[in-house]
Length: 494
Image (cartoon, rainbow, N blue to C red; front, side, top):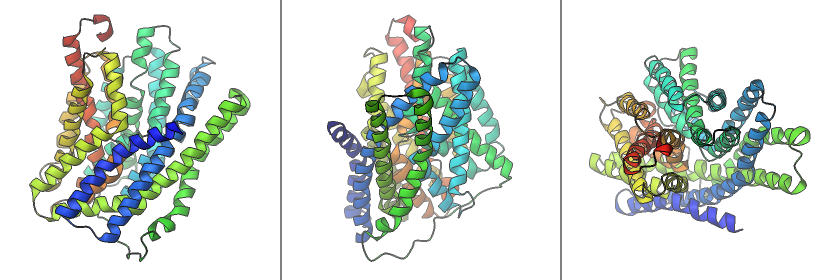
């Protein structure tokens, strides 16, 4: 069980800093209701246990499946097989992504059901599937990544002018949320297994990155197209009325468990069915690796159920309450400081960020130090949350005022930095916008927006994930420029 112990340690380092900040604010600034605090602590424990088990399941089944499907799709050497397989697998993996379901629940609640949860999940997953195929086709034909991303973000820029502010925030948040703990390992494994089929070793190294970045643009475009097709005008929203308090601290958990367990099973079952079908007709794995993957699905189901239970029955409610309470103090400085602290500790504690820094250390042979990368990302994410709070408290500042120059800089950097860093940077948006961003931090900003008279919960409360996901795109490409100046290994950085 050493693997599970390691996962528990990693996830604890992600969740515990948030818990510490909440407790400090509870005892020093804004006391929480005792029942609410107890449920928050229970929810935090369930998140730690659930996400640890879920990530173990991902290691056992999702990553191996990405490799298996990648080899299987490329074996016939037929483009239509890759297109059909990419569409199916991209859709099923995205549908099962926990962070996407969390965002969809929040959107449904804030819009009072105007954008149903299932509709958003399906639309975003269709976008991910379609552009996963675009990314796979790019790898096979060796099309430069920066050409593809430039074209996609130009289209996104044009569509951004045609949709409402509410849909703009939701579309970019969906992009960050859907590239989470389940989707990213699968897509990376799929990308690697297909890219190594190419004879050009240097090209395959570069092509193994960037697929997540392309697929995530599909989520943005899908929501934008949904807005245009539905003819929806400007959206506004508000937080739902609080339900009557339950007398027992565990009441919300026991009430939500059957429903959440059913949804978890429904999310994972299509991928399991596809695997069993391929096992019969194509994979024909031996008993030991087959049972290992089945065990991974069981772990993923148990972990996903516990994680979603902790999020929905105790954890996010405190995020909303705390954001509301801090904003209600009337001190913008306090709100900005808390937002910066939340962003900084979240990114420093995120296990995937440490994996990323090791990856950069290996690629650059130590020329770009891990500590420097961590500090740059932490400050960047902290500032992105500060910008989110500024949007809330200053009515004149809108989301596109930040996203437009941000993405112009990110796209422009692709033409000046090392090409290898482009794929790493655009794949890393989901690394920064991890589970804590999709749960607690987004809930915190919604609470702050609800307590600010000039703010709208939908327009100003959403967009947080979008700004956090933008940070690595700029930060890592700037680090690539620094690396280019420090190294003489020209063949690697061309």
